[in-house]
Image (tube, rainbow, N blue to C red; front, side):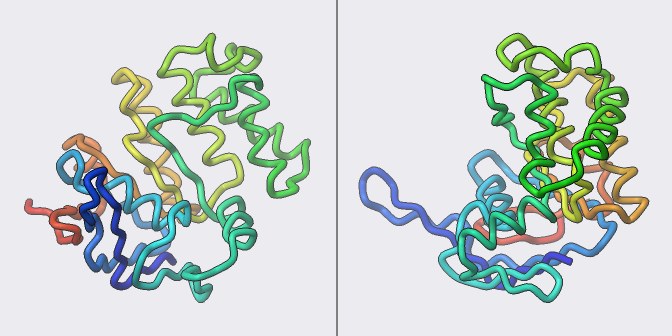
Length: 225
């Protein structure tokens, strides 16, 4: 479903040094797969997620979604692709503070021209399952970090994306609410509704995945048992 070969990404340090974060990453994500990427802080896990999700362009290599070549595609096409096929769960939430929790989630449906009534029904079900139905009319500054994370998760999966990319999706949640999100991710992968790729420091999150990869020295390798 999502396939990358030889992905490279380099950043320029303040002192002018070139720092190569991704050094020829090869990766393939199959429909219904649940894959975790682990690695030390600063190893490039979030960079990898951003490149695979077409938020950052690679400096080398190639990326495909099914038979669609994403490398070198125009920004407008990539934006439409992300809205239709990808769901992002960010560490930083990226909620719009001037919109309520409900409005933030439904914004995802507006981007793809989805029927408003169908989107509202789907959003209502998500809010109930994630335990935030009573917070739908609150603005992000009035929500706890855990509540904001659950709102962001609802927004990410509202349109039933084919691929879910999650960056530490339970980092701001207590154990009970983290379990709700993990169950949602597993259910979507098991049903074949989505392939899931998450990056994490958590051994527990990694153990829940069907395949675990380790990002080290800019390359992905199977993680040690």
